[in-house]
Amino acid sequence: MRYKTVGLIGKPSHSATHASLNVLIDELTLRGCTILIEERLHSSLDRHDMTVCSMQEIGVQAELAVVVGGDGYMLGAARVLAGFNVDVVGVNRGNLGFLTDINPEDITRQLDHIFKENIQREERFLLEAQVHSNNKLQSTHVAVNEVVLHHSKVAHMMEFELYVGNSFVFSQRSDGLIIATPTGSTAYSLSGGGPILVPHLDAVTLVPMFPHALSSRPIVVDANSNIRIKISDRNADNVQISCDSHVVISLAPGDEVLIKKSPNKLSLVHPPEYSYFNVLRTKLNWGSKLF
Image (tube, rainbow, N blue to C red; front, side):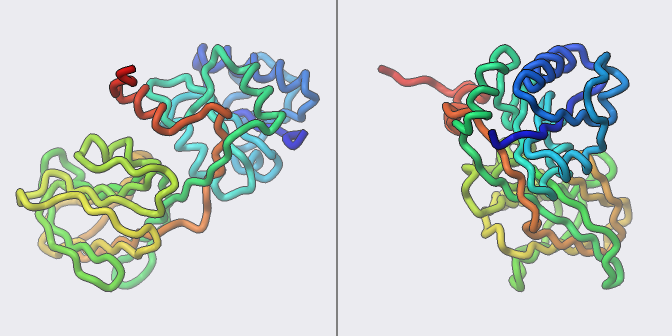
């Protein structure tokens, strides 16, 4: 058995999450696993037979991390766990569940597959966003789904320049720009008219948000490119970038944002019957076979 130490992560004070966590604890105990419980969960669970850890400590100590919740909770865990050598699997207690594969009613059977290593394992790359002001690095942040350049006010335009590598792409007046990974291509980028990228593609998509030009269209570029956004000096109001709609950083006129592939990767574990196209058909209500 490869997985001897398993970390459990989930939404505190959420009854459905707690129900799945209790099933997981019982099943993992039967398998003789050392169980690490994320510290924010411990106080809301009436269980005292586990080691309480931070998310980072789970990344260091566990071979497997189980995230119980929706895609949003998985994203928060993934940004941290991608920095460690740990496999990650999700139990869906949210709405769509693009990243959380296991049905709560099917935990026991899927754990049997996982502990027999009858699984599909894949790596998803992340993006790293560096904010530069006056030619000095101010902060660095990571995103699993997307980095979004946007205005601090709703429905306000901004001006910026976009470079891919050393090549100038365009200057634009718009509400912003979405830079999405294949993982994020089915999230905010999709609602903005961007293409769906299958997970194994080494590419990112650049999706303008309500551009002031009818000819502006999404672009797909090599994920190993350095993508640079320069904020125009003519922007009078506050402009921001956000990572996975979670981390928000304010930008000043003249600031630059460098976006590139992160050195960290998320190691996702899927059930043996997992199919990305089946996920798309199910979650996006595509048609089934005619015959």
